[in-house]
Length: 484
Image (cartoon, rainbow, N blue to C red):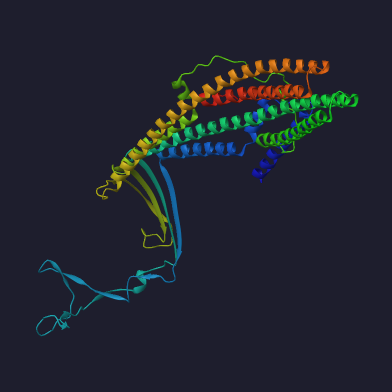
C-alpha cells in the first residue's frame, strides 16, 4: 500500500507540474533549457537506463557479499506411518560363566550326564541359560521426525572467482552509468533538433505571411492599374496565381508547424496538443556567435561515453578470463554446521531435540574435465580480443565523425554569412523593383521575380541560421562536450 501511495503521489506531482507549466507558458516563453529538462524528466528510455544503473548497483553489492561467510538454515518434518523395529521378535542370547580351572568364560550349555559332552541340536550346542531381549526394547517411535541444519561457509580461496565477480560487477555499474549518459545526450540532441525545427517553421511562417502580404499589395496595385487601363488582365492573373500559391504555402507551413509542435511536446512529455511559445521564436537573429574550433582527439575519447562504455566492456571481458581460470584452480572453504533431530539419535531415539556442532574444511581440486575449463578460458580471451577490436573501430569512426562535424559546422557558418550577404542584395533588388514598378519603368514580371528572389534569400537565411544551431549541437555531441 505504501508503494502504491508513493506512485500515485509521484503522478500527482507530475500532473501538477505539467499543469503549472502549461498555465505559465501562456504568459512566459519556454526556453531551450526548459525543454531539455522536461525531456530528461519524462523520457521513458532514460527511466529504463536509470533503473539499469540501480540494478547494476545492487548486483555490485550482491557480489561484495561473497567475501563474507554465508549462514543457511535447512529444516524438515516428516510423518512416517510405522515405527522402526530392529528385531523381528524376542531374541535369546546364550550366557557365559567363568571357569576357575581354565580361567576364562565358557558358554552355559546342556551336557550329557554320562559323558559330560554338550548336547547338540543341528550341530549347535544347546544353551542351558539364556538372556532374553524383548522385541519392544528395539522399537523406535519415528512417526514424527524433525531435523534441522545450520551451516556456516566461509570462502578462503576460490581461485580468484570472488574478486573477478566483484570487478565485473563494478565495471558493469560504470557501464550502466555511461550508457545512461549516452541516452541523456541523445535525448538532448533530439530535443534541440525538435526545438529548432519549430523555431525554423515559426520564422518561415512569418516569412510566408510577409510574402503573402507583398503579393496582396501587388495584386491590389495591379487591379487598380487594370481599372485605369495601364495593365492587362494577364498581369492580374499572373499575380493572382502567385498570391494563391503563397497562401497555399502559408497553409502548408501552418500544418508543418503544428506537427512540429506536437513532436516537441511528445519529446518533452507534454500532451501533444499543448500550446506554448518558444523563447527563440521572437529573436531576429537565431544563429550563434562563431567561436574558434579546436579539439584534441585524446580528450574527445575521454569525453565520449561510447568509448567509456566499450572500455568498461573490454575490462569486463578481461575479468571473465580470470573467472574462467578460477574453475581450473583449487578451492578451499571453512565449513561449520550445527545439526539437530527429533527423535534424538544420540539418546536412543527418544522423542526430544538434540544436536551437535561440526567444524571442518572443504577442498576442491579440479583434475580432469576433458578441456572444458581450458576452452572456456580460450573463449573468454576471444571475447576480450573482440571487445578491443570494437573499441579501436569505434575510435576510428568517432574521429571521422568529429572531422565531419567540424567541417559541417565551419560550412554552416560560411553558408550563413553568404546567406546574409545574399539577403542584403535581395532586399535592395526588391526595393528597386518596387520603385521601378511604381514609376512604370518595370513590369509586374520584374517585381514578381524580385519578390521570389527575396523569398528564397530569406528562406535560405533561416535555414542557414537553424543549420548553424544544429551543427553546433551535433559537434558538441561528437566532441562529448554537450552541456545540459
